[in-house]
Image (tube, rainbow, N blue to C red; front, side):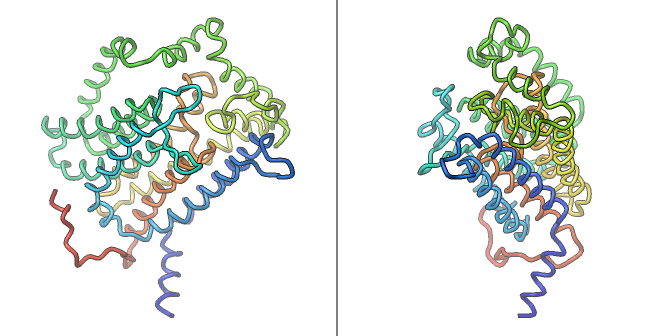
Amino acid sequence: MKTVLRSIKNFIKETDKILLILCIAASAFGSVCVLSATLWTAPEGSRFSRDFIVMAAAASAGVIIALIISMIDYEFIFKLWPLIAVFCVGIMIITFFFGVGPQERPDAKTWLKIGGLFFQPSEIVKIGFIITFGVHIEKLKNNINHPLSIVQLAVHAAVPVLLVIKSGDMGSSLVFMIIAVIMLFMGGLHWGYFAAGIISLVAAAPLAWIFLFDNIQKERFLALIYPDLYPDIIYQQERGMTAIGSGGLTGQGLFNGTLTQQPNAIPESENDMIFSVVGEELGLVGCILVLLLLTSIVLRIIMTGRHDRSGKTKVMCYGVAAMIAGQVIINVGMCLMLLPVIGITLPFFSAGGSSNISIYFAIGLILSFYRYNQQREVIDVSQSNIENPFLDI
């Protein structure tokens, strides 16, 4: 009994409580915003909408998952990288055959329907990519600037990007690219390769516009420049901007937003446009609070990476930080009409079960890194006496 109590005491002591509290606070804040955005959809006699219930349940389950993952020695997780890679590729291929798309993009195969729930595989694949790409960079770290190493890493990064693009999720593919670039930079790749990459992207932009983007994606870009020519395309963003602008300094009050409380006044207000709900109902103060909260989470994750004693987790910490920061920048940019709508959620705030659970997988990984880097005896649930057949692959 004393051993169990001591283990629980050590677990609480060694957990990054600041990061965990920040994440729970963000999820709680986001859940309330989603409730406000979907209050009009609540069944008669109920105070809670389905989106709120799903998000609250997903966040609660996510916290538990994160704590469980944090108890696992990350070395054990790293040894499973081949299985993780196979799983990620496999679930994306399954999505090609059995996936479904949103109403406005029925041709896209971005979701899997499991029972009565929808799951977006690309969300969990992001975490798998951070793990496998981090392990790959670690294996090549002494020769990372060798041309052969560059080719290997480029192919590794291209696989999930191309699979996600093939599924029709251009937005998520951009997040994968951001993650890969930041991880390579922190892994020690020479800046000359990045310069060459930027030049190549600029040169290939016309070809991408012609052959890669479909008509809807092109129109979303053009709508920002010529809004009068694409009123239906820009409608969502214009309504979101109107809501944000009407909030002023302190907002119209929670559950009192003029547009937020009108059914379908702001399309996807609980999801892609949740920042507009914050702006209208909580004003500039609420928007700043959201950004400060998310920035604090990113900085806390970076701090974990900077205190890495083993040298094996730093790159992955920056990968998770890049994932969250990249999504925040893209989502807020969409809401402020600085970027086209590409279907990127605001971490911890947008509605959705798969996105909220998946991000806590990443937080669990960071918590494991944090605990391992403490000066203490690790609680290892792995069976270290069993040889791992994938260790030398």
